[in-house]
Amino acid sequence: MATHRRYYDDSFEREFEATVVSCEPVVHEAAPAWEVLLNSTAFYPTSGGQPHDVGRLSEANVLDVRDEEEEIVHIVDRELEPGSVKGCIDWARRLDHMQQHTGQHLLSAMFQERFGRPTVSFHLGTDACTIDLRGPEPSEEILEGAERAANQVIFEDRPISVRYGTAEDLAELGARKEVQRSGILRAIEIEGADLQPCGGTHLKRTAQIGLVLVRRCTKMRQDWRVEFVCGRRAEHVARQDFLRLRRTAERLGCSTDEIVAAAERVVSERDAHFKSARATLQRLAEVDAALELRSSAGAGEMRLIARLFPEEAAPAEYLGHFATQLAKSEKTVALLARFPGGDVIFAQHPSAGKDMNALLKQVMQQFGGKGGGTRDFARGRLNDATQAEKALASAKTLLFQSSAD
Image (cartoon, rainbow, N blue to C red):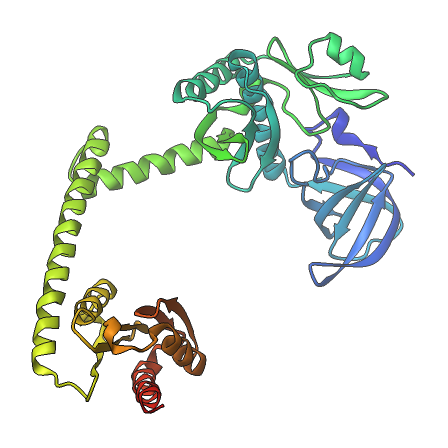
């Protein structure tokens, strides 16, 4: 039996009475639940990018609502007896969804009508909504222009109505999107702005959208994904954005109008300090390597330097510079590690004649970790940093075994 969809006629119906047609036990998200069919419902099922409603059927909580051809299936957390039942929609969630969905229709219409960017998909998320636009990348002027045009229609408080007709009827009336479906279709009309076939829940007037706020635009495969929020979400997001700006300005010691210039100055200073620190670190590694080579003695045909560094005394970048400098010396092998970082570097001068990559793989296989490199330089990281000292000892043993072979 087809379920009568009450939300088609009145998206503002919050409470209703219906008859339980069936109630069957199911499993929902690994928990016991029941699948309920009603003769009519005001609950909207997940469809067309819009999430389902939640609420109550008598004492049962509605967990999910699904569209299965002609029937609307309600997933509830307790069994319902056959007969009459009272339904209650979570109105805050429904209103939020209507603000986002109606705002999307209006925003998509402005992108297409004014800038030739048709919408190819829509997603209504928990925190934000997105539409994917087809065509060249929208400039900031286009994003702002579509937003401003949509908000102008909102401020004019135009009526929103439901129309019914065939695909041909709607096309003649100027529907924004062609639908390849037969029979009578439902469409949402925003007076003088948009006509779009849609089965979702929508507002009655544009002022109820409140505000459309476009936030960002990013590349998504061959299209451009525009993130936006409407209504109460827009109010919340705008407030949070302002608070973040104010806190940032306070940290930078400037006004909110000066944040961009102040941030650019801080980034420039950071980059300069980073470049200076890197040069200093490299020079320090060169000096330390020279001292290490001067104080260390060779072991027959090979000089071996094995050291475990505390993490605070040897950043990962320093370890790489230090190993590189040591490996510039004839017949030298460097086995280095950091604790508790777990970083491991094996390096050699080609004249030492060993295979650092093979040695690293043996050690990582024994102690657990990942890494790789070349015959002369290999680096990795142990899964358990506490094994760093044992890993170095094992590497030394394996190295001398290979020498004996």
